[in-house]
Every structure is written in C-alpha cells, then in structure tokens.
Length: 169
Image (cartoon, rainbow, N blue to C red; front, side):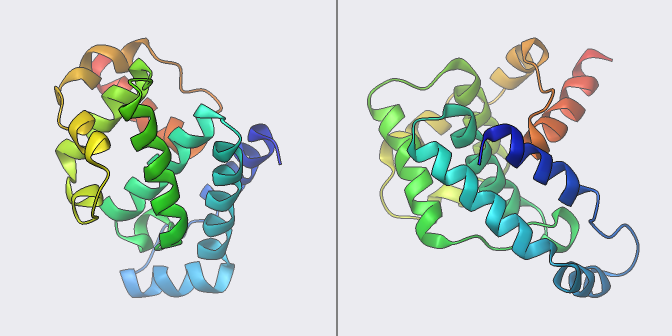
C-alpha cells in the first residue's frame, strides 16, 4: 500500500469511531465495528513503509503508538498495538537519533510527546538516544508547529492541526 492509500483508510476509520455512549459502550462498538482491528492493520501498513525508509510513515507510526498510550482506546479508537512492531518503530527512531538524522519536525514532535506522556518510552529498556532526543526543549512545538503542513496526514495531521489552530488563533 502507498501512504496515500493508508491515509484514505485512516480517514475512513476515523469517521467510524463511536461518538456517544459510556466507555464500555464505545469499547463494545469499536470491537463490533472492527475499528480496533482496522487500526492495528493501518499501523502495520505504516510500519512496512517505515522499514523501506519512508520518514512520514515512521512519524505516523510513532504518533499512533504515542496516541494509543496517551488516550483511552475507547476515545481514540486505537487499541494496544503489536509490541514487537512498537519496539521496531522505536528502534528506527532511536537509530535516527543516534546518527543525528532526526528532522526538525520529528524533533519537536518527540519533545511534545515526551512532555505529556514520558512513560510511552520510559517503560521500555534501551532506546537511550530516542529518550535523550525526547527530553529536549518541550516548547519547541509552539515555535515550529505553526510552520508545518498537516493536510492529508491522517490522524497525526488532524491532531496537530487542532494544536496549530490554537496557537495561531
């Protein structure tokens, strides 16, 4: 699959999230509608592209993992993701950090994610370079987010566009 095809899937499944009901009701609806399984597959498809060196796919896998840890699955629609794939994704980001090849956008995203939910990577052994890169200036996102484009970037784009609008307005 291409990144564009996966983005279309993301858009389709984001619109299927339940909007009403208790957490238990939303959980049941996500299970029944196949939402959790769809997000597992979307994550896996992005990992395949990230393995091929697609940086945007890597950013999206990291976001989906972080978001699944920072929000209840019943609200974000993203279940616990495959631990082996998560380790692989974090390893890819760690390798970029080790080689000092993180782009500006990924740097400020990392510090933002870490400032809100450090446990998403601190709970895991290793990934020292990733952890160090994540401990940078946590307000970098306020400087760089307004300069980024989030069109057609799936759930990552929607999340960051909301924050961008808050800064600009």
